[in-house]
Image 1 (tube, rainbow, N blue to C red):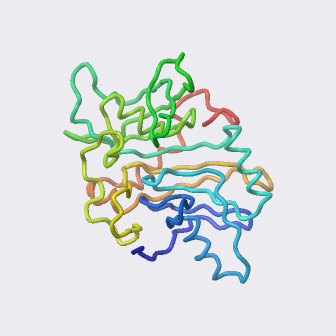
Image 2: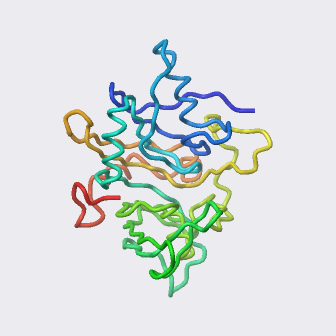
Length: 269
């Protein structure tokens, strides 16, 4: 049974909208599974008699929440898709990781860069770290800054320089810092708890994903006049349940500061 809820729309424009994707929801449907796309179509259909155009030029993993850009016309879809293809979109994420495996030789620095060669595992919806000579290997680079840490968890700001399958999840898990709730990459931490009522709950579904990975900041060019559109997505209730002492609004004020110096329009992932 699927819970009925409304998708939070952060920004309205005739050519696109930006929504705050809930965790546990697919971006696009597969085999009839409810998705953000199908829910949003129903939600927007109230505004018009015609079937609304709802096409995302990018996707977020099922367990990821946050900023998701949705094209409302075919022309804007083409423009926005090209921006993602040419790495002209700036993306920052918040993650919370398990740091209990830390030791003196493998401590999580206050800031830094991860660089690995990774590839999708054949016939499996996961990726792996490999050598640069391995078939299908692609360079993965991200930059991070630690915003909070306690005895067993840390919150980090992430900026992507490349965009690979499960890149953030894999690069942190491979160093012994799985994202909270990410069972596919080794997390034993219960991120879901009881869960807010806004989460899609499918009876009998054992594959639901809810992880501490939030697409917090998104910057792209308006498809009509090329002006910058900059969006910050509030964190889901789960974050405040797990970190009641953290003021997440204050954390978001740091997002305008780049995490690496060589970023420029056309050189982002």
